[in-house]
Length: 155
Image (cartoon, rainbow, N blue to C red):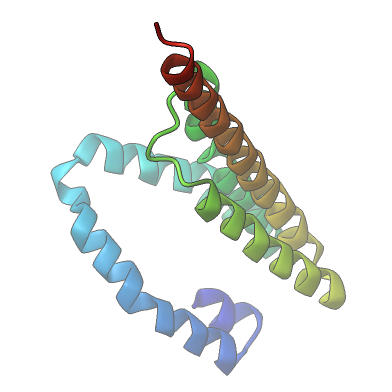
């Protein structure tokens, strides 16, 4: 919303942000971050280091680059887990591909209006989503192949 008011001076951006508030609030109240102060504090620290500080130092473009870095870093634990373990149950490759597809739509939009900072940030996070989706498909196929081997070639 701040970007809509201060940066773009756009009523549409402000209204689009307001439409997401009920969903965001419902997510926050379901997660109950006040019960997990250590994790919430670390999340706030990540936000301050990657988004707020760069924004205060270098303005909107730096803030957007920092958000892109944060969005990419937040995908690292999922990627590492998919590398470490063969079990990908609970990882929806479809949701990661949908996220990558949405990122692609934003990339096209940013390219058309020549907003380079959000374009680069979205390319980074969208690429990470695509990588995780691909890793999940690979792990699901390995798991399926292993199941077939156990069942078909059992004594």
